[in-house]
Image (tube, rainbow, N blue to C red; front, side, top):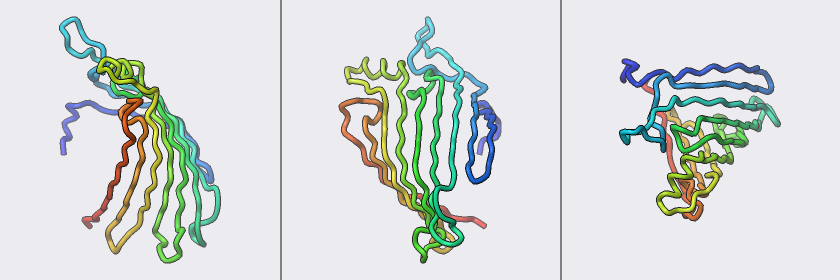
Length: 185
């Protein structure tokens, strides 16, 4: 683990309210400059830009009580960024989290979500420079289930990504993963 902070610090400020419905707004910024994804200095090196952005979120219970049976929560998030240091200038996510949907699996959680990431003008120009047709966004759907088996956490996940990498005519991509959590103590 590197604790030198040589790579800089990510500062985040968030304000919001919790309760049956949680909402928050926040801003973030890296303290060190990063390579711009398109702009160059007169020497041909990447220009330096400071990454920053803002976000808002809303989440809360829609149905039920996990103590007595199934519970369904909804969530939505919106984020914006500079679009100079990453390919995306913003995006949104929305979905449902279902807890205790199987009586025999009280720790089980099933989640379904959709998302869309908006490509920055610089990212679209970079894609166009390669001869490909840039899309305005990348979007996808995701289904995941998390549960415990003994001491271990297990979470299979499947995603379908449309316009991967911001390329309009690219084949859709299916991403399948398995996350395993092993407690050390």
